[in-house]
Length: 211
Image 1 (cartoon, helix red, strand yellow):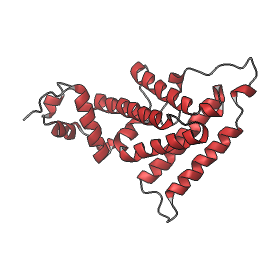
Image 2 (tube, helix red, strand yellow):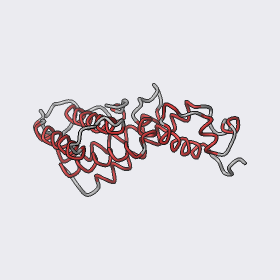
Image 3 (cartoon, rainbow, N blue to C red):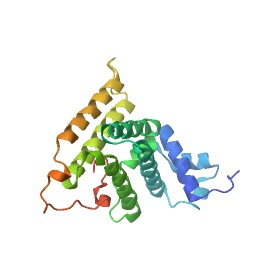
Image 4 (cartoon, rainbow, N blue to C red):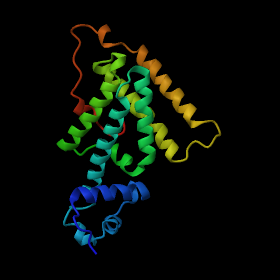
Protein backbone atom coordinates (compact mmCIF):
# COMPACT_ATOMS: atom_id res chain seq x y z
CA UNK A 1 0.00 0.00 0.00
CA UNK A 2 1.44 3.41 -0.96
CA UNK A 3 2.80 5.37 1.96
CA UNK A 4 0.61 8.36 2.79
CA UNK A 5 2.14 11.82 2.68
CA UNK A 6 5.03 10.95 0.37
CA UNK A 7 6.81 14.05 -0.93
CA UNK A 8 9.93 14.72 -2.98
CA UNK A 9 12.01 15.57 0.14
CA UNK A 10 10.80 12.35 1.79
CA UNK A 11 11.80 10.37 -1.30
CA UNK A 12 15.27 11.93 -1.13
CA UNK A 13 15.58 11.13 2.58
CA UNK A 14 14.57 7.51 2.01
CA UNK A 15 16.90 7.27 -0.99
CA UNK A 16 19.76 8.58 1.15
CA UNK A 17 19.09 5.84 3.70
CA UNK A 18 19.15 3.23 0.94
CA UNK A 19 22.38 4.67 -0.47
CA UNK A 20 23.96 4.43 2.98
CA UNK A 21 23.00 0.75 3.13
CA UNK A 22 23.91 -0.41 -0.39
CA UNK A 23 26.28 2.37 -1.61
CA UNK A 24 25.52 5.27 -3.91
CA UNK A 25 26.74 3.37 -6.98
CA UNK A 26 24.20 0.58 -6.39
CA UNK A 27 21.26 2.86 -5.73
CA UNK A 28 18.26 2.13 -7.97
CA UNK A 29 14.82 3.64 -8.29
CA UNK A 30 13.37 0.20 -7.65
CA UNK A 31 15.06 0.05 -4.26
CA UNK A 32 13.92 3.57 -3.41
CA UNK A 33 10.35 2.80 -4.47
CA UNK A 34 10.31 -0.31 -2.31
CA UNK A 35 11.61 1.69 0.64
CA UNK A 36 8.90 4.30 0.10
CA UNK A 37 6.13 1.72 -0.29
CA UNK A 38 5.22 2.70 -3.83
CA UNK A 39 5.75 1.36 -7.33
CA UNK A 40 8.45 2.82 -9.55
CA UNK A 41 5.78 4.62 -11.66
CA UNK A 42 4.39 5.99 -8.40
CA UNK A 43 7.84 7.33 -7.54
CA UNK A 44 7.82 9.39 -10.73
CA UNK A 45 4.99 11.45 -9.27
CA UNK A 46 7.58 12.98 -6.96
CA UNK A 47 10.93 12.83 -8.80
CA UNK A 48 11.92 12.85 -12.44
CA UNK A 49 14.42 10.03 -12.21
CA UNK A 50 17.57 8.66 -10.61
CA UNK A 51 19.64 11.72 -11.55
CA UNK A 52 17.35 14.01 -9.58
CA UNK A 53 17.38 11.60 -6.65
CA UNK A 54 21.19 11.51 -6.57
CA UNK A 55 21.37 15.30 -6.83
CA UNK A 56 18.98 15.54 -3.91
CA UNK A 57 21.17 13.19 -1.88
CA UNK A 58 24.19 15.34 -2.74
CA UNK A 59 22.47 18.48 -1.46
CA UNK A 60 21.28 16.66 1.65
CA UNK A 61 24.77 15.35 2.34
CA UNK A 62 26.44 18.74 1.95
CA UNK A 63 23.83 20.40 4.18
CA UNK A 64 24.12 17.73 6.86
CA UNK A 65 27.92 17.76 6.79
CA UNK A 66 27.91 21.55 7.02
CA UNK A 67 25.69 21.41 10.09
CA UNK A 68 27.87 18.72 11.68
CA UNK A 69 31.01 20.78 11.15
CA UNK A 70 29.35 23.97 12.39
CA UNK A 71 28.24 22.28 15.60
CA UNK A 72 31.70 20.82 16.16
CA UNK A 73 33.35 24.23 15.70
CA UNK A 74 31.08 26.03 18.17
CA UNK A 75 32.99 27.45 21.13
CA UNK A 76 36.48 26.33 20.07
CA UNK A 77 39.24 27.80 17.93
CA UNK A 78 42.68 27.08 16.56
CA UNK A 79 43.93 23.52 16.96
CA UNK A 80 40.94 22.57 19.09
CA UNK A 81 38.57 23.64 16.31
CA UNK A 82 40.65 21.84 13.69
CA UNK A 83 40.58 18.57 15.62
CA UNK A 84 36.86 18.97 16.39
CA UNK A 85 35.74 19.57 12.81
CA UNK A 86 38.04 16.84 11.52
CA UNK A 87 36.61 14.28 13.91
CA UNK A 88 33.08 15.37 13.00
CA UNK A 89 33.83 15.11 9.27
CA UNK A 90 35.33 11.64 9.64
CA UNK A 91 32.46 10.41 11.81
CA UNK A 92 29.86 11.61 9.32
CA UNK A 93 31.67 10.05 6.36
CA UNK A 94 31.83 6.69 8.13
CA UNK A 95 28.28 6.78 9.49
CA UNK A 96 26.60 7.85 6.24
CA UNK A 97 28.75 6.48 3.39
CA UNK A 98 26.12 6.83 0.65
CA UNK A 99 25.19 10.43 1.24
CA UNK A 100 28.82 11.29 1.97
CA UNK A 101 29.85 9.86 -1.41
CA UNK A 102 27.17 12.02 -3.01
CA UNK A 103 28.29 15.11 -1.11
CA UNK A 104 31.76 15.14 -2.63
CA UNK A 105 30.57 15.02 -6.23
CA UNK A 106 31.01 18.21 -8.20
CA UNK A 107 27.82 20.12 -9.08
CA UNK A 108 26.59 20.28 -12.64
CA UNK A 109 27.51 23.52 -14.43
CA UNK A 110 24.99 26.22 -13.61
CA UNK A 111 23.44 24.40 -10.63
CA UNK A 112 23.04 27.54 -8.55
CA UNK A 113 21.38 25.81 -5.59
CA UNK A 114 24.21 23.31 -5.26
CA UNK A 115 26.82 26.06 -5.60
CA UNK A 116 25.07 28.11 -2.92
CA UNK A 117 24.93 25.17 -0.53
CA UNK A 118 28.58 24.40 -1.24
CA UNK A 119 29.48 28.03 -0.63
CA UNK A 120 27.90 27.87 2.80
CA UNK A 121 29.89 24.71 3.57
CA UNK A 122 33.14 26.42 2.63
CA UNK A 123 32.21 29.49 4.68
CA UNK A 124 31.63 27.31 7.75
CA UNK A 125 35.01 25.61 7.30
CA UNK A 126 36.71 28.98 6.79
CA UNK A 127 35.13 30.28 10.00
CA UNK A 128 36.37 27.22 11.88
CA UNK A 129 39.90 27.91 10.65
CA UNK A 130 39.70 31.62 11.50
CA UNK A 131 42.06 31.20 14.44
CA UNK A 132 44.96 30.60 12.07
CA UNK A 133 44.60 34.07 10.56
CA UNK A 134 44.71 32.77 6.99
CA UNK A 135 43.13 34.63 4.08
CA UNK A 136 42.88 34.71 0.32
CA UNK A 137 44.93 32.01 -1.44
CA UNK A 138 46.39 30.63 1.79
CA UNK A 139 42.91 30.04 3.20
CA UNK A 140 41.87 28.23 0.02
CA UNK A 141 44.97 26.03 0.22
CA UNK A 142 44.27 25.26 3.87
CA UNK A 143 40.66 24.24 3.16
CA UNK A 144 41.78 22.05 0.28
CA UNK A 145 44.45 20.39 2.43
CA UNK A 146 41.99 19.76 5.24
CA UNK A 147 39.30 18.29 2.99
CA UNK A 148 41.82 16.12 1.14
CA UNK A 149 43.25 14.76 4.39
CA UNK A 150 39.90 14.01 6.00
CA UNK A 151 38.39 12.60 2.82
CA UNK A 152 41.40 10.43 2.10
CA UNK A 153 41.64 8.86 5.53
CA UNK A 154 37.88 8.37 5.91
CA UNK A 155 37.60 6.82 2.46
CA UNK A 156 40.46 4.40 3.11
CA UNK A 157 39.05 3.54 6.53
CA UNK A 158 35.59 2.88 5.10
CA UNK A 159 37.10 0.60 2.46
CA UNK A 160 39.01 -1.41 5.06
CA UNK A 161 42.31 0.00 3.87
CA UNK A 162 44.03 -0.02 7.25
CA UNK A 163 44.81 -3.63 8.07
CA UNK A 164 47.83 -3.18 10.33
CA UNK A 165 47.26 -3.25 14.11
CA UNK A 166 48.38 0.31 14.85
CA UNK A 167 45.52 2.58 15.93
CA UNK A 168 43.80 4.54 13.17
CA UNK A 169 42.77 7.03 15.85
CA UNK A 170 46.41 7.79 16.54
CA UNK A 171 47.15 8.05 12.82
CA UNK A 172 44.28 10.49 12.41
CA UNK A 173 45.47 12.58 15.34
CA UNK A 174 48.99 12.77 13.87
CA UNK A 175 47.52 13.76 10.51
CA UNK A 176 45.51 16.63 11.97
CA UNK A 177 48.47 17.70 14.13
CA UNK A 178 50.53 17.91 10.94
CA UNK A 179 47.86 20.13 9.36
CA UNK A 180 47.83 22.30 12.47
CA UNK A 181 51.60 22.75 12.27
CA UNK A 182 51.45 23.61 8.58
CA UNK A 183 48.57 26.09 9.03
CA UNK A 184 50.60 27.84 11.74
CA UNK A 185 53.56 28.03 9.37
CA UNK A 186 51.59 29.47 6.46
CA UNK A 187 51.58 33.27 6.05
CA UNK A 188 48.71 34.85 7.98
CA UNK A 189 46.50 37.65 6.71
CA UNK A 190 48.42 40.17 8.83
CA UNK A 191 51.61 39.27 6.97
CA UNK A 192 50.14 39.88 3.50
CA UNK A 193 50.86 43.08 1.56
CA UNK A 194 48.20 45.74 1.92
CA UNK A 195 47.45 45.66 -1.82
CA UNK A 196 47.07 41.88 -2.04
CA UNK A 197 44.05 40.67 -3.97
CA UNK A 198 40.99 39.32 -2.20
CA UNK A 199 39.84 35.74 -2.11
CA UNK A 200 37.22 34.47 -4.55
CA UNK A 201 33.71 34.11 -3.16
CA UNK A 202 33.25 30.93 -1.10
CA UNK A 203 30.70 29.52 -3.55
CA UNK A 204 33.38 29.31 -6.23
CA UNK A 205 35.53 27.05 -4.06
CA UNK A 206 33.24 24.00 -3.83
CA UNK A 207 34.32 21.64 -6.57
CA UNK A 208 33.99 17.99 -5.65
CA UNK A 209 36.25 16.10 -3.22
CA UNK A 210 38.78 18.92 -2.94
CA UNK A 211 37.95 22.56 -3.53
